[in-house]
Length: 196
Image 1: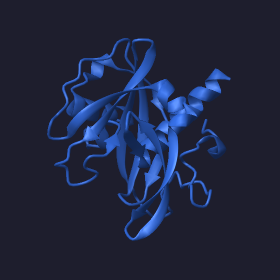
Image 2 (image 1 turned 60 degrees about the horizontal axis):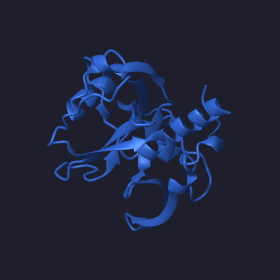
Image 3 (image 1 turned 90 degrees about the horizontal axis):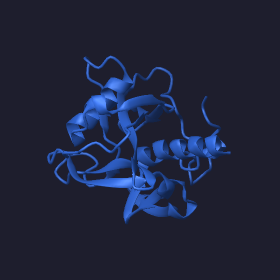
Image 4 (image 1 turned 180 degrees about the horizontal axis):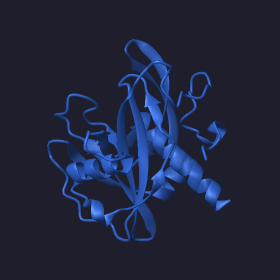
């Protein structure tokens, strides 16, 4: 089931409180993409890897994201795309991940992507070998960090000449925003609902 948008704090547009569209407008065929949220025990926490994208990439360089990317024709489903991309970016063996399910697809207008986050679990954090052409660093983020409202912020940023109120997670000094924050906010909402 799709969680009510009132629970998806970062999916709400901070400027006018309207929920963002989850699906493309009629007549628009989006490019399909998937990302992996890999939950694994580490110490006393469940953690998930986020990547700091390489400074050499042409798009979104230096931004924090989940491992993921465009679907390939050979990918049989979104889980296959997410697992393949996590393997390409971080060296995570697909066989090490138990796929639990997927979150709500999110339409991203600037890139015309429809992104589906696939949630997976590993009984231990797999060994990772980041691909240096795609990844500058790996952040192992505790799920409880994302669930702590103290780590959620909103700032006014200038983008393309416009002032925008941008919600983000402050994680170890990194700003996790955009589609990654939208996806993680749904994960947090669902985990909180289970915990009730």
